Image 1 (tube, rainbow, N blue to C red):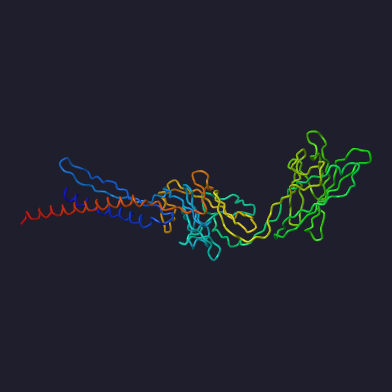
Image 2: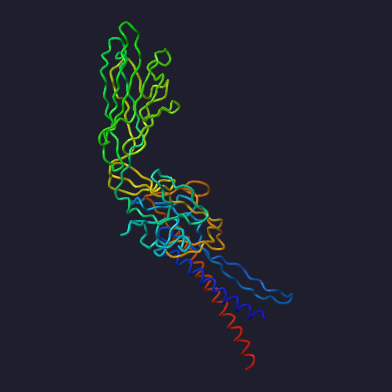
Length: 436
């Protein structure tokens, strides 16, 4: 009966508009919630099989979903551990239980942004209890081969064990000019001594001493342009020679003053294709860049005074952790008061085929579902995902003006469906009165 189908359609209209009211209420309530993705209620009609001389109202049904693919604006904050994805994608997180569980049992969730801070155990977590996950890096900042389709290699980010840090020196650059006059027949053969500092494995400052001894020419002969170099590690107990070098410099119009030949010995080796002198310090293997033959960016011999013009080294002394920062590629770095920076973790950005198919959980986090498809962990800023931004949070995607407009429409639609039910009731009452 058509009048009965009208009643059913009216009731269904009340139900679907109640669902839309619920989504609007949730959107408005979370208008200031960072990382909130608004919900949407979509109506679709239901059609019953019709007869020529009668029409039956099929009614309406509602489908609700989170619009996870919508991106909120990023706002700047004062905390380096406020992290957001500047574009598509989500960062991996877990809950309190997942911190101590293995990868197979750990709840894996994703969030577009988070105000992370260090807890009492050194883990980075949000006030709502979401713990940041990442791939741990080695001493060189490399993560190695990791699984990108599972969370097997992800670990809860812990910065408490990196409160102090030091890095041993492994690379030294030696830019020195040796006086050409010292290799002429008037040369005295007096050595030139150059101390160079380096950092050992404990962050302590040590030094090596390079002694440059010229080979003077015989009386009346041309300059030899030859030098011997002895390198002593003063950090060893007792100090020990760790390498020697025999240098001959060119005296030509095109390469004058540059290295012609270099022969290493005493435990050191020289590679003329890279210009690196390899030797062993007390803290481990290291290289000294003395320059390649024919180039003037290392050791030179010109008619000038003895002059160290470019002495530098890598490594860092012991430093106290000052801040944790993330760069656009997702590299989480520890910044120490010495200026040294160390990569601790790489935070990947996850992407799924259908973002709106993710299952929402508390605290603006989402889980994988059948509708979302499987995730893939990208490096931030590559493929379809955006870069990671520190000192930033993502605003809610709720637009108050739009929600208020939808609220008015929903209220009118609800009242109209209620009027249908009232009208059907009056018509049925009229039918009942016919019996009296």
